[in-house]
Image (cartoon, rainbow, N blue to C red; front, side, top):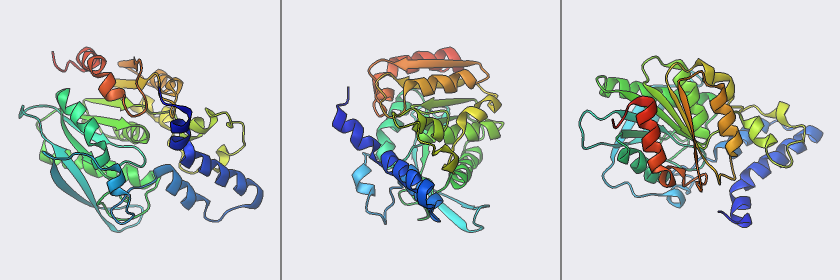
Length: 291
């Protein structure tokens, strides 16, 4: 179980955002939305110098480049992604949507966990992360980037079953995408939440009247009922960043068929490894994978 210092170190960006929001209540802040985007996403790009801090072992993975035009800005966007093939040429494919701070290289270990469960994996960096277009992301733009990555999978692997996976903040992005597309076979989220305001309210300072000021809301609980495919929600019992209660509440909002898996001893970062057996059983029961 993580010690107190580790928990506080992981939460400090959220604490800073809370301070910014509280200050804005008293004094106002013209750049409040920009500050929220910086602290919620904490993008790790090549130019920021943060990429190596979250680096991972990417040998055996192929670079993929995905280009699209942003409806938000009207500008061209170039996304970097990693493709991890599976030894079975007809294996289902998984779009991996990572959370805040970590880029695709930092998520490589979880990509390998999903490959071991039977998937070929495409993990994409939103703009502002890794080698993708260097632009501060927003809730609207990460939704666009996830949709562009899904379109790439549709073009490149039209004959294979395709699934959507999101970790942490990426889970909320995955819920949004799964509610929009009609050709997904299933949604899998791990360590995710109902909404950003409810994450803040789950902390001991949640009584602070800041939720009306939050612009990057990621209201996953309001969107998951629109998902028409089976939904698997996984959470670690030792997740001290996103409490398991939020994962279960998200699960309860899903229409079904659905399944909730609580991985005993899993933290916000270790659940996919600790709970591999539970994952395998749930994938078989809910999606018929590995049968």
